[in-house]
Image 1 (cartoon, one colour):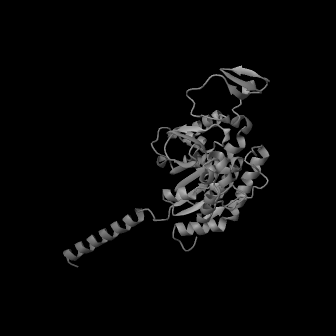
Image 2 (image 1 turned 180 degrees about the horizontal axis):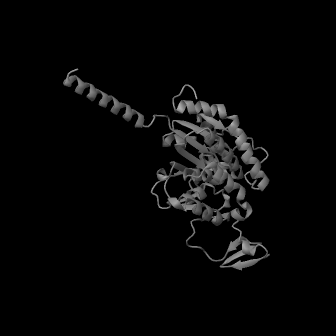
Image 3 (image 1 turned 135 degrees about the horizontal axis):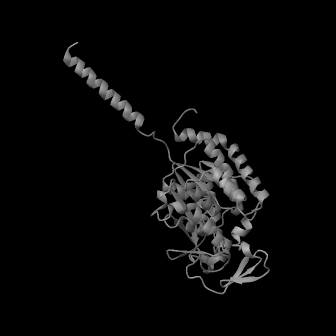
Length: 335
């Protein structure tokens, strides 16, 4: 073999190896997966159970959108918490004290006053001194300070980020402007503020002030934001719905007919029903745990345990659909 032929063969071998190395090093192309977590108060514990199955099947999550308790579960998951972390969080909370902003030092005091706030058995019932630093405003029985502080402590590693796209998993949080009755997609602010805004049930929690908006629970308009996660770039969607009754949509609106807006018009027209139906149909894997026996306020220890288990059952029941989605994501013909 001549020297020239040897050199050509060597050059060909080098080029072939370089091509193979380059191919092996390049990431496998696949579809992007969106995870949607619906609202439902205490029933959000079931979402944790479903997440355990998703993790066990090693299904990647590229985008997350959530509403209300789904925004809290989704926001924490986007920050890097896993299903086991969230399981522990749900089971270990003193929910009554957390939601009610209870001062545990005053739990044995029938009535007391500290720093301009009146307490009954440790629960604040009124403030005589206005807090100018508060991010909440307007009417609501609960201020939600304890929840905000807890969420802040859990997400402090990401304080100061410019966008929720900078989280380990890009995230969107759905809230509603109470004054205009318009959906607001939160994608940049303190993460705990977004989660707190999305869970502000009107009348129960005070609304949150943000960029000129007065924000309340996103479930008023979009309780299962499949459309939001698709707008983020998701090719396929796994949606976990906590809403047990699937209502027929309504076309009648007091606002359009009589010029009457606000909560009354919302209660009559229920715009969330129409969007919920469309979003259910657009999900590739739709999971709705059987939670008929529970309500948004079922924060008791036994109820939380049971709902996590029911979420696990729902995840297992959807296992074949999830595996099919996984094969589609990686463009595989078999596992």
